[in-house]
Amino acid sequence: MCGRYHLIASGQQIRDHFSLPSLPAHNPDYNIPPGQNILAVVQTEDGSGRAVNLHWGLIPSWSKDRAISKRLINARAETLAEKPSFKQAYQHRRCLIPATGFFEWQSTQSGKQPYHIHQHDNALFAFAGLWEHWERDQETVYSCTIITTAANDKIAPIHNRMPVIIAAEDYDRWLDKKTKRIEMADFLAADAYAAMQVTPIGTRINNPLHNDESCLS
Image (cartoon, rainbow, N blue to C red):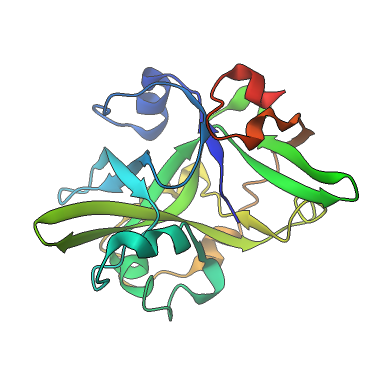
């Protein structure tokens, strides 16, 4: 799964990496948990990219209330095209979720060992995401989920799932609303984890209230 990540790049770095004209108010965040608004990139009607804030935890448009979002922080790549919660968003509302690293916990005899998974110098990359628009009783929420897949050889010793990372050269194709039928396998074929480093870290990251550079060591 993917239940915690960080985005510590500057606003200028994010704009340059994703070719964005502007960005919502942004501060580096070392410890991002589900249930809060996170930065995402969506495609506008004219085909350009736009940075928006989305609630992390998908709320399907048909849901009676927003409590379902707690169970939908991730979406399995293997069943996107058939699950009612995700299939419409998979075809029409894909997004990129900028990140500079994420965290996973390995179960050991002495407890859970956290790991920091990142590129050299915490370079920017993007998770594959889906977004939704939900309205009930005069309340409107734009929400998202991060897609996961079976872990590769690098991540499997820690956890059996990992977030899908979209290679930079595939950003536009992933976002393209004109592509009504899209195959997840095409994006999984790119080895987006080749440059990833897996680093054991201390337990400070366990508390989502901790949010500073020491979370990464």
